[in-house]
Image 1 (tube, one colour):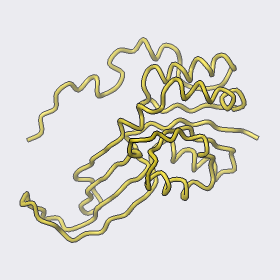
Image 2 (cartoon, one colour):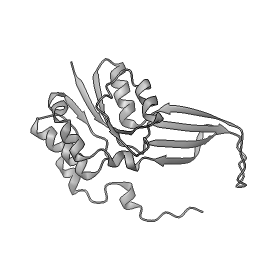
Image 3 (cartoon, one colour):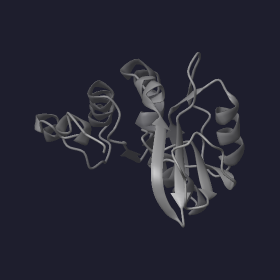
Image 4 (cartoon, helix red, strand yellow):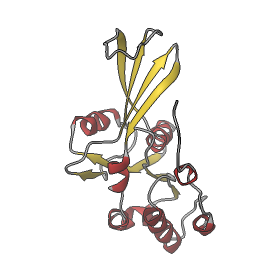
Length: 186
């Protein structure tokens, strides 16, 4: 059976909170009626779930906080294996919140950096036996360069299939945040 191994990154999110409400907000510090929804998400998590629903043996390697958001994620992760998640004490699980008006995102707020930073080369090295057993590896590109390199080194050592090549590290300014040094919002 094909086994998938997927790493979390995340400007995408474990817990997405969406607000749906009226369209005439004012910058007055007021409260507005609306509806709030909580869902699990994130590109890697969504891929792990989709593959699990298709019958693939999917494993998601990620980092979560020791909090209610991580508990919620675990209860919603029934078609893929999340048991190898790094539970990082003292941080919150990655979260993204969007404000939607008529189905369009008007504002988005994320709190993901600590979770991403917890997916370290050391954590990845501890999962070498999983990597050795897997048929295919999917890596989210927002992990640190050292973490991505750690996965790629293990994948190469165990002759695993993948799409990301060593030339990735020769691409300077690959990530948008490196390209965008200053953004002015008016």
